Image 1 (tube, rainbow, N blue to C red):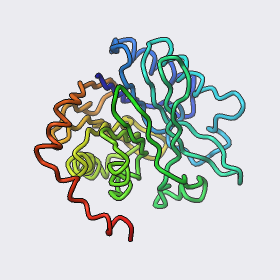
Image 2: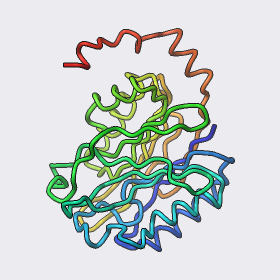
Image 3: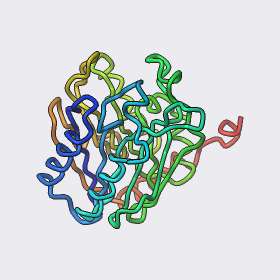
Length: 259
């Protein structure tokens, strides 16, 4: 069970250019059949408040690219796109496609980043989204969600063994990114793959450091600062055994979750 992350230096508001980058990176990575491939938040445009310029629209250019990518390589692919809510605001989404090219999950970011005024331009999602992958449950999350451990605890209660975190997380808060990815893995006894962008947009620098973290908090792969891919093998039997040997999740107080 292979997971692959593609860390991009996203070309600003140029979907075709970013599609080409992703294809080339994945071609070089030579993914195993039915691997899970994860791309950054808003992977084809960069983190952008101009919803009208980056939203998928009727053409759904990036979603159709993700579907073709999944079918062409015979893998599962998750990437960040923008769509529109009924009120005209954006929806910051993580969409996942199966090896047959069909959509299997769509998650809308539950915590728009108010510090950057994302909440003014993007509507909040309604619920956590999970999907099955090779016998395990995967929960999708996006960037600022990482700061809200209760969301990941809900995922744990729904059986999540792997969390994806797609992001445009800037360099000034890099230490938070690295620490929180490990924390979410440790406290939920789960794998976490956090895929960030690198390079620069018109306002910020992004240091990358996409990570794959094991359920004990161990870093299995670190992308560093440059464009490229990372990969790791998921050991489902070992994860189940670890949870049985150290059953911390069984001690969750349900009254606290209900309050």
